[in-house]
Each structure stands twice: as structure tokens, then as C-alpha cells.
Length: 146
Image (cartoon, rainbow, N blue to C red; front, side, top):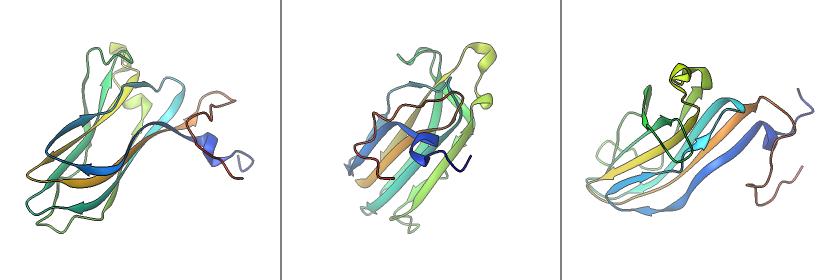
């Protein structure tokens, strides 16, 4: 498997670009993960204003229009707090697609990030990992240098 490019093995499905986010919840688009074995959310947290908190997690849905969206058990981070010194942290959530409610028809995923108290700088990228079929798309990447 060493001949495969990492840009093909870990494809960015949806992202929230780095910015300062005030109080509220950001939900990503729901994306199909039917062609991947794993999903990986990488959350890069920058500065947190005093009294800020941040929560994040993965949710599942039956369509890319987010029909039937619901939580995925055990796929939330421990709350980050400015008071706890959690600014400038890097956290991730891993998911094997067989952890989805496949019997219920769930094959789409989205992430959410909830900021409370005050602003937090962060970016988030949801990757589809280990594609079931080749070739894999590369359109989301701005540039791939190999």
C-alpha cells in the first residue's frame, strides 16, 4: 500500500476554514461516507477568549440533505475550555463506518462545533479515509505536491 498517495487515502470531504467563531453552533454539510472505511475529524483550536468553551462531535444521517440526523454514541470530544488552558489544542475523532447505524440506512456524516461564552479560533476538516474503491477523487485539494 506504500504506492498510494496520502492525498488519496485521506480525502477532505468537508471543512470549516480557520477563523474566529462567536457563540453558536456550526454544522457541516452531511456527506456520504459509503465509499470509505473510516472517517477522521481533525479540529485545530487556536486562541480562546476568556470564558470560552468548545464542544464538537460527529452525527449521522440517512441522506446528504441531513435527513434523520442523530448523534453517534461516543463520538464527541471532551469539552475544551479557556479556563482549562485548552487554547491552541489539536484534537481528533475517529470513526469506523461500521459504527454507523447501517441497519437504519445511515451512511452520511457531519460534524458540529459549538462555541459558548466567548469567541474561539478554530478550523475543522472531516476526512474520508481508506477508500473502498479506486480511483479516489482529488478535486477538493487546492494543490497536491508529490
